[in-house]
Length: 314
Image (tube, rainbow, N blue to C red; front, side, top):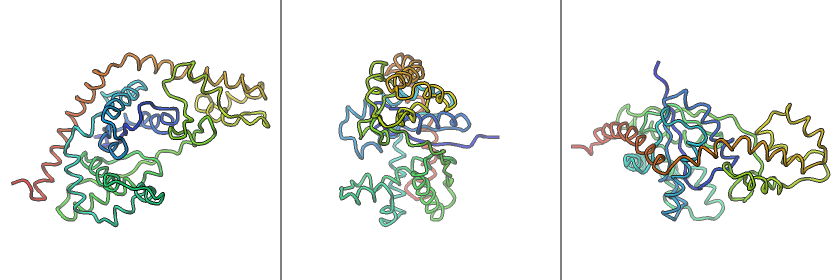
């Protein structure tokens, strides 16, 4: 039987992954993509809603693909491509924009959150859901892995597909979300959710000395026998059955427990870090070119059908 088609994207808004990026999103994807005919898109057009520096976006794009390759992503098992290299994404977005209403787009969570804070939302953010719908629907996607908070993205894609199909005839598959099991919120060094915006992250590819310095700075509660934040991060690398004896035998000895965490992080990331050093910019670009050719063939065929149905091809 043919595999179902899976689609997901990575947005190059940062140049380095941290532990929460890996365990919260990347690891779940790596565990499933081989089960499907998978498409992984570098969402550089989406990044334009926030990134205002061309060199930064260019460098981020190279680095995040390098990160994925270093962590075990196999481009032979999936199509990895750059969104901006397939102009059909932007073209189909315009078609969908002409089918949906302004109030419909105003219901998008990202737009509502931005305006609720009194911030100005640019038109790119406002139309973001239709670009995402185009991303998904161009490839006859059946499965989109998302967290529960991103369910709406797939609902918008289904709505766009339905509106087009009703207006012009059956054309797009209506994708279904695959909700990723919620990974417990991974705390940062200050106890809040690990996030670049909080400056409390542990880099995925940091060197041992850098990791040690960051781990030793983790906030601890001197009133307890077990440092909660250290333990929560440690559980990413070892089971509770393995950790409990270590923490029992080092009650109150936070320095020893942090040192143990450093060693476990280093043991985990050292092979990936070494692999990453050997991935050149040219290798990254070749992966994107090869994937782009495959994605382009599929997107072009789908868009030719769309153009014929809407009447713009003569």
